[in-house]
Image 1 (cartoon, rainbow, N blue to C red):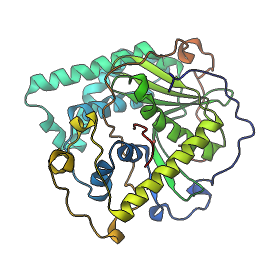
Image 2 (cartoon, rainbow, N blue to C red):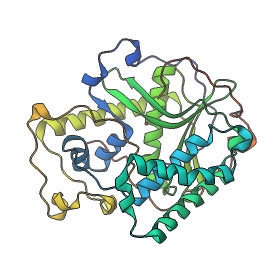
Image 3 (spheres, helix red, strand yellow):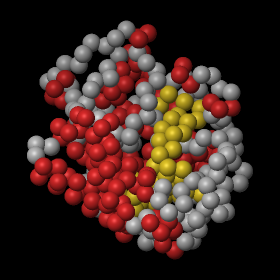
Image 4 (cartoon, rainbow, N blue to C red):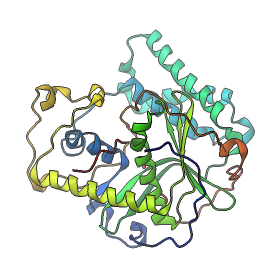
Length: 350
């Protein structure tokens, strides 16, 4: 697909082709089939990976890259708790070690990621570099996000519950919505852009269903190499995304009923924690539980992402953050309204 570009998108005459979210009287969400962007991405990457994570619920050891992503996200979330004038690189750097200590207290196993203090210092230095890079891409003193780390959900007409977390939702004075996601990898090559944009369109669908409004802009901030990918969706994009999500869920249901969770080898296998039991590498998966015991809920949404493709794609030259074209800055918070809307290659759904 071509590189994302900014274009003007109207949001009038949005058709209500799908149902409202659970807050409007839907059935108990704990009994609904559900899907998050992370688990959708797992199935698109490899059906067997989805099975290992959702059905077998196999433990996965923490990785330095995932822990660093969690740490950087935590700092950027809390940066906006500070007064606008205090949202500086120095403030962000001062938050880094306390947030790492907080993560360690919550997950003591993270301490085993490093063999010595030098390794840990190098790892923290990489996180510091990402935080400094963030300030070259945005000026947080000019932004007042409506939501951060926002849990969202909506139910499709098919009955599938969509759920996940959005890093940041900005709302401009005119009501335009921007969805922002921080990535601690590097921007993907053009042929891999669909993977990241699928996640963002997933979020956009949930906002469309809960707000009856097409988001103006989807923005991916790649802190690994300091690039931004922006995409302005329209209603046809979101309708197509709903069709893809429904088709994906049907494929998951077929795998569930037939027990056919075949592996899909790719270069992403290099990051998989389950090679030892994967048939593609000569391993044997654990026996499947009986069909009645296989969950149709893809567990709680997870922030864990597969690593981004290492190469970069140029960001569009236009920058709403710098130019103020859409006036995302200094928007007062809004407490009312329903919940708003949470990686992923995009091969054809089987």
